[in-house]
Image 1 (cartoon, rainbow, N blue to C red):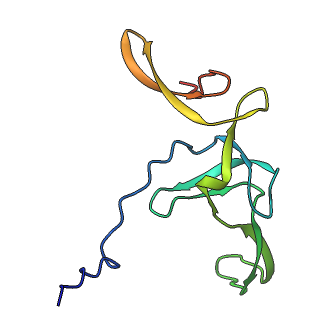
Image 2 (cartoon, rainbow, N blue to C red; image 1 turned 180 degrees about the vertical axis):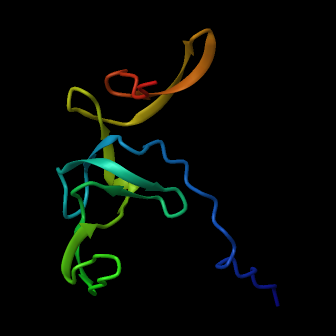
Length: 125
């Protein structure tokens, strides 16, 4: 009999190369919040998910904790959304994919993120 492949479930996965960064404006292109625009609060490269302000709101039951000043009840908070379901929004409000280009900044060559559709540089630095 042929040998079975090793169980790869417990091996760590390689983190995704996500070109979207914190504080970028993104538009949801798929899912229940399709069409919403929000600012990226957090990027998780291990799971390939983003936390976007005002998108994928879920209700969470919170237990009161007077020591931390937390009032109990039902709280609404953002839930992570997969990076494939969002596109970056350029300054003129159009969605675009992200590419890279080498620019000379201060005499040094540096790789910058560029909107593919408009050619606009996305890095503010």
